[in-house]
Image (cartoon, rainbow, N blue to C red; front, side):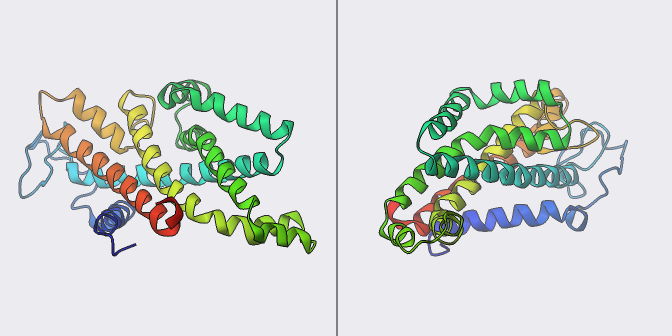
Length: 268
């Protein structure tokens, strides 16, 4: 994987983002509540590399702590999406009759709705707490994951090793856990990387319109929204969170594409 230049760069970028955000207390130059009323909307400087916000708080510190929320929420929502999606898709592939059709038509119905629109509906129903956002974002990306998991498993069900396992009397659970799932992992791992990028983007979009993470909690999306609201006071306030979101999404997408090519050369 690291022999590919784009994969190596994206992996390093993702590793740095994860390290500095999850370890925000170690890397942040200030405490997130430190105020400096002499530096309201301060420009980038030696003391404040990304400038300050409307209360004089260091913007780099806020981005690191906001990224902590975005990353933790992203990983949790990705785990929900992958768990639900894999079970959903595998069930549809192993039960190709009426049950499989119902499961896939339900997935198609949900996938036909724009992610942001469906997210707005779910936010209105479940609220904007962190736990609710994890469940909502997990639900949003579970149908597409289910379709990918189903198509991957259907290809494996036509393979000779599956027929051999059935012929010697192996149980269905054993075949799924010991044979089918490991062979489907390359596609699922690359899908997880892409889902993480999509989760970060959609969470930032919902937070930007005020329907995501709510103050006093902070995410990259809420920082972007607050920066936009104060655009005429400090143009750098919204630029830096936007750049971080852009870099994170691009790096994760690039890494996901390379993971799929390396782990599953037949799909390259």
